Length: 506
Image (cartoon, rainbow, N blue to C red; front, side):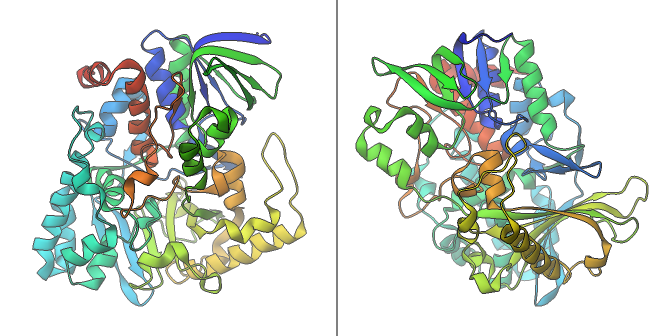
């Protein structure tokens, strides 16, 4: 039974992947850790939901780097969850890139050699460019040593200042190949002329190494981490939101929750939006320039998601993900679409019907949506624990957008409108309310190759017992957030010490 006063070595605010990885890492070192989560379900973007007895992922649809010896496999092995994960490899061609004015789809394959070989079949004059691209991916990722659980500072400055647009213009003059190579840029919400190439490399390289789906959803990752934490003597408490922070002599003394409980600790890690984390502490405890910089950072755009339960034997199952763009030219600008042109792209994934192999059972479609489109309902909040009806206008808005997106999907999946049994929609408001991110952003703040240091947020703050983690700190995605949590814990435990333990894990 939890009393009104609780004392721990470490309190983690938020149970997204970054918070859970940090919690387990510190619990493995004998720290008594407590994770506080405002929602009913642990896991942040790892959450799943069930509709009509079908499971849908909130934000994770496939994972890279999980093959034996690869980076995420190494980290998950250290955390003690790799052997229990239920995963299945995706086919060699795991992504397909399609354009509205081209009937073909272009393959993105697992394995560096297969990746090059498949695309050389489509672009026979571009083998040299493709081999250079693959080499540059590996070189760039190696500039971030934690990506491979290595030590050293790397040569970060060498890769920070090149943006995606200029890199690909130098790589090849073939406009369509450039569009194919950035065709899955929904993985990082790439902005033309701004997004650094290292963001592209860190986001896509691990998938080319290996691509997997989570059987029965990505929430198994958070469930396994919570189970491991509890086995190590830690606690994970849901349905309690941290609402206030108590300071003493310039350090965090305790946090209190909306349940009226006070949690004190020696160390605190905030796995929440960095803007909100600083607001909880209060502006006077930080340098004005630092506080204002974090608050003023632009965030990446949000998403509109369509989750469909399909009628049996209506739509043929495709095992690869599909990335569609209206045109080759629109790939780089999709994130900043014009409202009357929406949607200009989508990412689509399916699950196979176990009773009717070869046919799809569910289908998920994701596309960009700017938070401004739902601004008029921004004062409302709606979660499982605090349900709210946003009103008839909001329901009509969702219906209209769903129909527009289905019409676009029908360009590639014939008959999709008539194949739907049930449809469920998530908007930027859903992401904001359930994940707790500023304006429902997909991947944290916007990174800019023209000013990379301005967008850097260190896991260590001026307050010596208050740390940050999550997708706004290092990188987004399963691998990026895991690496970011290790970076946070390295500040606490010592970098060499922690990385040695990770590398020694069998």
